[in-house]
Image (cartoon, rainbow, N blue to C red):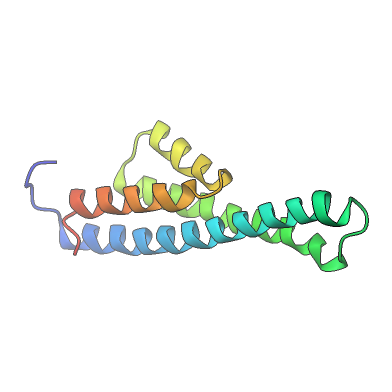
Length: 118
């Protein structure tokens, strides 16, 4: 992006959305890793049906955080005026273990540069 001045109010809105997105991406990534460990333990260690009862909370928790992550992606994408393909790839990064961390960092750096954020 060229060195065009970004209105300070827009910078504030984008910075706020970027922070929300970054937090949501990290939490979603962590819960996805917890879900992967739970699935491995459920099917390889305990055998299906013999797992601890609290395992049943991990999937829904990840689902809840993934929905928040999707909202955060749409919020940031709208304010940063992303193309729909960028929205989609960013949201889908939340379903591949470790990818949400990589994409979060990439998007954070892109948005900071584009909107001249500290």
